[in-house]
Amino acid sequence: MKREGPAAARAQGWGRAYFAVQALAGLAWWVGVFLSPAIRTATLGSLDPVIVAAFDIPLFVIGSAVAALGVRAAAAVATGWTGLVAVSLAAYATITTEAGWGVLIMLAAAACSVVALFFMVQGRVPTELMVRGPFAFRPASNRGGTAGNVGATIGQLILFWGFFLVVLPSVIKWFEHRWHVTVPFPSAAAPAGLVVLVLASTLGIASAVTMSSTGRGTPLPSAMPNRLVIAGPYRWVRNPMAVAGISQGAAVGLMLGSWLVVAYAVVGSLLWNYAVRPPEEADLERRFGAEFQRYRDSVRCWIPRWRKDLPHRKGRPPFRP
Image (cartoon, rainbow, N blue to C red; front, side, top):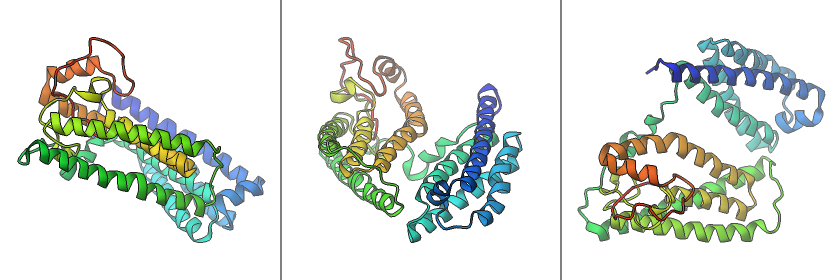
């Protein structure tokens, strides 16, 4: 649903501004493609730049420029074309091992174009769609008691850490090598990453056990704690599991020597902070009212505030990684 008002107008302005920047960047890139063999090879590989330009300049460069004037149809066309190019170029680079840097540029442009399109059409990004269906916020049933909640939480940690810290980074690392977009890391990166991984994992386990044992629930949205948790790490930061998960992702990237895995952790932190956290905090405020408001005012989201007057009562927020 489209929203009207100052906030929506500002968002629409940001969307138009992004498409203006994208049009200028696209034009500069095409100038570089035709003037520099290095740029052409890094971003297009062996593809014929004349054939690609015949489609890309009207649909990407000119389409983005027209979108910057406020034409939503042009924004939709530019966004759709950018996504198509990103997917097609990714397939081409995976098969041929060429044009890897072009893939990364177009993937970033496609993601930003989607956000800008939402800004122009709706005046906002409908992040609430991410917490629907199986991801909707619901309190745990507590049929299994505290032991059941702790056991379920440990199982969730094994599943999520296995996927997000082992499987997905391994896939990203494979593409990084396949697309020839690797960047050398210093020798100290791997041991430093291991130290960070151990510390972050300890924080994650402590936060998860505190949440499940004190809050009578689990980190999953579909089985959230029934009590607000201000015990353990939650006394010092509102989102210790998110802090742990993001730090773990960056640590794995350092250990693998993969800048794309580190970037994946950074993007994940932005997605969580701007897309997941707001509806989650709104749900907490609906369920716990003034209790959560006092907690939110006393404890920071990401950086601990070392104060003696922090809330100390047991039973407060269920934040997830």
